[in-house]
Image (cartoon, rainbow, N blue to C red):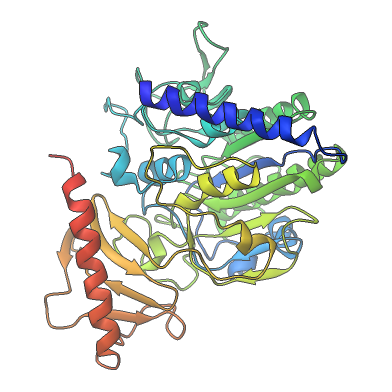
Length: 441
């Protein structure tokens, strides 16, 4: 905690120095950008039109894509909820946070360590106010709860997934005041999340803000709002995705009505691939499966008129761990001092043409390194078989995929590219040497 407080104080002083420097120029300082991250739960790569979905109509999301940039090769930080959310907020592979194994259950007492530095804590040093509306799932007991312990100024939402019990909807009333809770009205839940986020935006329109709209849908079970029930060919799941699409439309319209849409970066993404329902868009496997893209690769759509390129589709690799360094860079802040950040600033991918800053991305299953993705190649060393994580790099049939030619990861290219295979196997060995020592004892 002392190290974190010291770094936050330093960051705040640095931000103040930048502000003072700005007053010496003749031009008025530009408003700092606002950030809204719509973080869906289990939304699949093929569930929205802009990434290939055809069954569910998503006109507002598709319009957002036309007005912004789509990252086609974006990976969630993990193939499950809790580690993915930890990775997004900290900019670090989840194994570093101690939350890489499975998801937090109602009976668990673990959570995101207070020593971890989060996006809202970083942005606070730059004068931002932050709110989380929706699903938390990073610890629901002291000292990890509520999310205001991690830099958020306001929280309204659920402690974990909406299929877990006991379940209540919580409101954080501020420091030193007990949280209030209420019963969950499932058909109204996503609407409640959005309404409270919208009020937060209204209340803070004059200052820079960060909003994490962490929708708990389309995670099963699905109980769509009455305005969307029965509208989709994809059943209740499709109805809920349609509801999410409508929320996206309302949000962007709201920002425009406030004159904030050109000052606000809005990103739509997901914590992992689809579960028992939903579409992975032809990618192999699903949520919780190890190695193959269907559990990790999810939609990523960014919009900020005048800053983010309109109508761009970018195939450069990126990951959920990139949010912290990217938002910090856009806010004029440095990465946290004294903290090893795995993510990188990908703002150039959104604002101008460019290649990924990543030489490689590491894919984990719990705490095990199971795959490596470079811009062209994907090597899978382990995957699930009959409920067990099994090595497949030792069975005489190494799994090397050319992602330029085989997005479905159907046919190994190992026999055709032995030098590439050797390089990727070396990368796996180096990643394991680095991260295996961090496994929980």
